[in-house]
Amino acid sequence: MGASEPQFITAGKNGAERRIAVQHTPGNGPGLMWFSGFKSDMSGTKAAALAEFGTARGQEVVRFDYSGHGRSGGDFEEACVSDWLEEAETVFDRFCTGETVLVGSSMGGWISLLLALRRKASGRIKGLVLIAPAVDFTEELMWNGRFSDEVRSTLLSEGRWAQPSAYGDEPYVITRKLIEDGRKHLLFGKPLHIGAPVTILQGGEDPDVPASHARRLVEALPQDDVTFSLVPDGDHRLSRPEDIELLLRAVAEMSAP
Image (tube, rainbow, N blue to C red; front, side):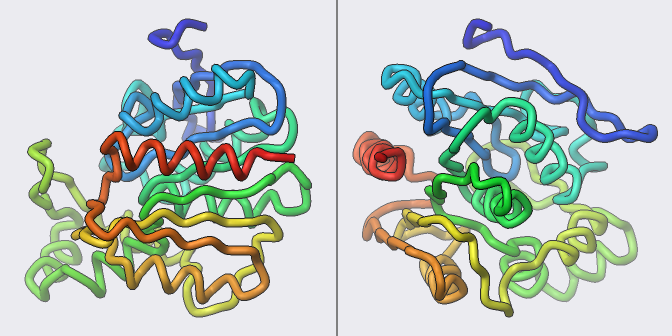
């Protein structure tokens, strides 16, 4: 498939099927699987750089768009973490043929951790590289974080709230369904064991996922080999050339035998 022509698969069942766009470049192991952030897609700067990097090295590369994102089907306002995790599992099970490095940005960090825990017994999780991992963001960073009493009241009474975007995009619509579903997948508050090495890249000037939030994840993984790299002047996206270089170096190290 060409880079501009994803293939489509179906995730979900019993009337809840979604048409999911997937870019799969066959190659050798360990493979790379990309997990985008909230309201982001697989055509972003970091995702494209990862795909080019992995392909040049002959590695298998898998990218996909969550339902309601990018070229996948589905309504964003109807989707939630359970849907996006189910789609990630479907893509992983179908396309990741051997040992795989999971690379997740922001919300993608949370989704990739959830996937790693669910597929731990498969022996196919080579490691994780996480960029500003927004673990439990619906609860910790939204509901208990920046949401005011007024916003919480609006969500409970109307079921949705339009959050202005800091990046010049359309406002993000946050739904009560997203918040309540997120509570089924919370990771903080209990020790986690991925059973694979984890590298975390975090911007010191990130306004969306504070460095303290990423450090909580380090503390939650006492049994795993965790590397934490702080980019002092880095923002949330970590998409500058030097940030991309750091990401690709981490992926190369995680891919080593």
